[in-house]
Length: 355
Ligand SMILES: Cc1ncc(COP(=O)(O)O)c(C=O)c1O
Image (cartoon, rainbow, N blue to C red):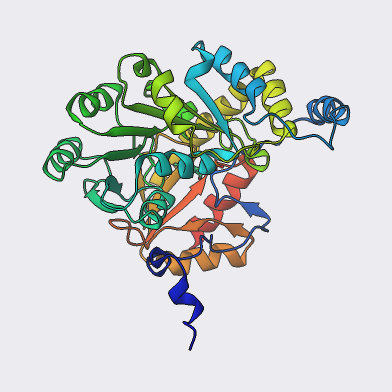
């Protein structure tokens, strides 16, 4: 008698689910994935497509997208061998976790944080040590340092600013954790362009155990192009490159990245717009009865309402898609939505005021 196919699979699959986002992809006002509301202008898309047309489509791209890596390293002002590009930062998360974790290893993950971290750690059969955020959703730095030492963790992953809470660690707090930790520390800066805090990239020259992760899916408005980056000192980079999927980034992504970096004023303008709208939305939300707003350092906001499921469904019925994040620890009855275009934000405010 042969075994059931489930018994033949990685036993870790029993502890994880399929990644899904409630509500689907289509909505009149789509605010559920922390995307940018600004697509690239047509003239820039046309430049990119023209360049891509001349590429040999029958040939593999480079094993690693060296041209994209050179462009981003020079944009950041750091050496090229400190930078690696991936097919979205999600791909880089898998690569880094594979390089750092496995059975018998321990990963520290604050809770709540980006759900993919725990999923990949469990997939790799690592042990997950969770450290709760404070009741106001801020990081508990002392608890992180204490748990890392007590549990002798091998790996610490910190999303700062953090998805889904919108809270950040200061540069000084990141440095305190790096000073204390006997572990690889991954700082995921997916939302850094919206933050009042300084990036940790300057610290990679001083801390051989630091990796900084970036995505081009948020402020750079390239979620559909799948571009992410990791930065570390070259010695650590040599190691985390080993599990990387070869040829994972296509030339279209590289060309797009280079063109967007050449036209970075578009990104700066979009970030200024989003920050101004974030301030306006925050002010208006404070005036709505039954809505509690958490201050945010990102392109999205978190509110607590009396009945998140009811508000989520009511908004969805009227064509406004937000994310119900009530299932996360400490986030009962919370909703998350990214800042959209002015008129989209007005529509959301109008519906929340009525609900
Ligand atoms: C904290 C964080 N890290 C990484 C990602 C993944 O981004 P991508 O794979 O699009 O680069 C996200 C996306 O929402 C995120 O919130």
